[in-house]
Length: 553
Image (cartoon, rainbow, N blue to C red):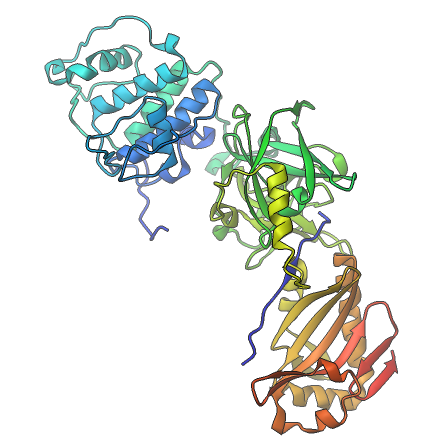
């Protein structure tokens, strides 16, 4: 059978296996929630709270703590000293002097970590962030202080005196005991509260953890408007948001062909530092950026696989230059790689956020249908999570790279999300009382001003097409014309829809005798399989062609 390929266009209008997640213990629940709201620990560690934390996991945790306290981005050591890990967070912690190896070029990332080791690493994190934070001399007061290793004694004494490290009852420290995730999270929050020069305060949520609309609006501090100067001298605007410290997400089509990018914050100030492209996916219409600003708090990422029709959502972006406007609405439909919403989406919203009622990012707004009301679309956030975001490209390198990918002579449009879904969801038309189902479709850019949609029908539906055609082929053409006009509003180019029969040559030899549509469009697949055009309708003409000839609508 013919292989059906769906092509999509960028619209300028805008593994782990399943593991049961244990809830945190009652004593740790408040600190775990604070860590979650403030982004103090990697989101992947906010589960399985009673499991023992590993050296690798704790390294990831203290790097985030260092960046919070120092307001700077950690970078990995240039040469990896370890043979059993290449985790960049471990290499960052190693360069900062927070962690060391276990000997023989090993780091032992999956080994458990002891309480005295954790106290030492917190001490080193504070020293790396600001040496003045760990001044003074302190004495160990635990009953089992004789069990604390000499290399950890000063560090345990300091962290205990500051109220971060506590005993386990009866004044026992248990230095060689292992530490759970929730214990490490709680210690991280306490260290942050004690030593941060500008600690943030979590919001107070409604019952059930939902936020008020005012609290949702306050999250716009983490969303920016971006101005793009293009190589042809024109300017474009869009939106972006912080999804991690110093990391932003936006749409590919927003930054495509950018010569320079300027960011504007909620308060009207602008970012003047360098911008690096860390990832992009043309087909997903996603791109990620890195900046030196790590003081702006990132938004929490949700799980778009749990989104359901009818749930309340909020969008924040900069429509037509109105910085960080808030709108609300409902999820209209959940599609395979799009979330359809009723929230207001306008040019400039591209790259903005779609939030659930808990303030979690569930999508990235990217498009709307202009010939209709409340028809907005967002890209599910899970697609961003799975995308490679570890590239290091200047704006020029990014544009040079994507230009090379377009020089292959291909006429197919690369990213055509809206048409892809609209036509896919149509699946069939009813003409003259006969339902004709499509076997598949391709979207092909013929020229800069013409796009063709080839809709295929198989042998079974050919008979239905012929039956409907006998009742009045003009009816079929009118239905297709409506779709062609509708799609043109989205793409901005002329759209032709051509219905193609896909079948076996020896069953319908008459096609080759009466092909008045266009003989050179017949395509052979193997010996018997053929593609044969039956009808073509253009959005900009009242004429249509069928294999009987040309006609007027």
